[in-house]
Length: 274
Image (cartoon, rainbow, N blue to C red; front, side, top):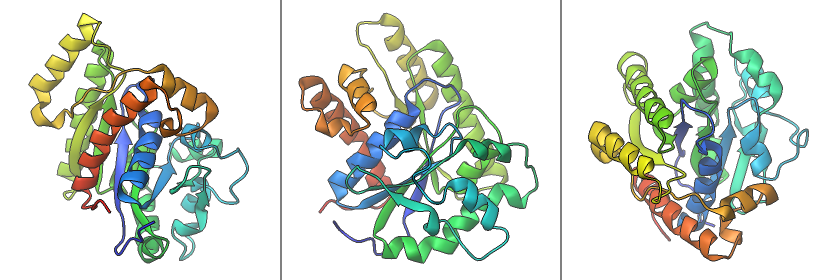
């Protein structure tokens, strides 16, 4: 496992529409980055539902500290995010777990509150580098709100996940607009890296039309290949294991598609294959 030589770059994975496979994409991308680049990857579960934490095989109540604790102590102490990092059963992947009480942060609206995650990371940059964390993926709640804003302001870059449905298309447009607005008004260094289309079925004509419309609107921001729906992904989700361990044709096809996106993401983050 290669050790990081600098503070890792952070990517917020966002979706305006729920049910598009954002969390699955986040954790599977984390595994792909860990395998391809031989680094440690940190997943920050920024959704009070805690789905990313659960998908990574971490049981509720197992981590001694969660992201909610980070939000509590970051304004009253010198601690950053590092004390909340917890190992997972997935090799090379670590998590800062969510818990339901995180949703109490949504009504908070003071200016500094929106920058808590960024502050927590900045305080822990050196520790993350020492731990060998080479990349950070932030799984966000769908929709809008203070938690999403915190996640984007705490990230260096954004990736949008959507599905090839009309509602997904609308959600992707709104997610891109939200990221562009935050860049213009609050975070000028924010990078919008791309849009990942998930759950694509080439046999469904509507999927092809929606993807064509998405490309017409956003051009090269739409990453290819469009990721197909696979039973292997559901199997892995149920087992709380990486799809890389589901060694059937569907699992291998999914991993090939996702690895394309992981390499594109890794290049944007300045990672080098070993």
